[in-house]
Image (cartoon, rainbow, N blue to C red; front, top):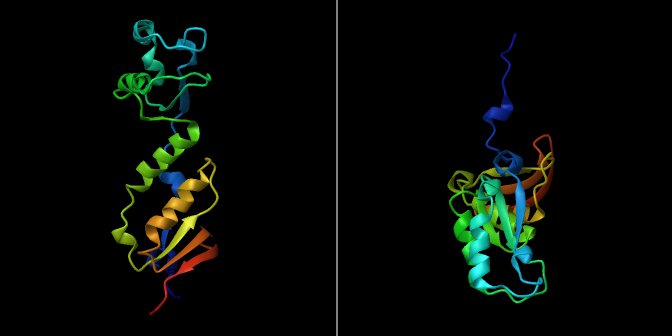
Length: 169
């Protein structure tokens, strides 16, 4: 009787599952609108005072989008001041909307991938996930690995769609 060989573990194929490495912590919005006088003007003294009363622990270990949903001119320093409160407690933040927050998260996550280990190897980017991975992350991943990988496929190792194959020349 012949020995059972696990060909998947012996395969040179590298599988990248973004769901395994993508952060699942809650994403929240910090809106400056409630801090504006008549939803129009930011008064510095009142703003600074109000920020001291915010329950900052509510933002602990969360990803935060800092925005102003009112149609008002808000000075840049106001967003930056909020950031100083979030820096020590949040997972991370962006001065911008939730889409920009996902771009930041994607860049942070993808920046940790060991690209050298993918050199001249076939790579499968796993497709199905239970957690919503933004399309941006998939595109950015391809841009990071295409110069190194022998080939790039999308899907499951048993059923992939070829995306890229390095020319032999």
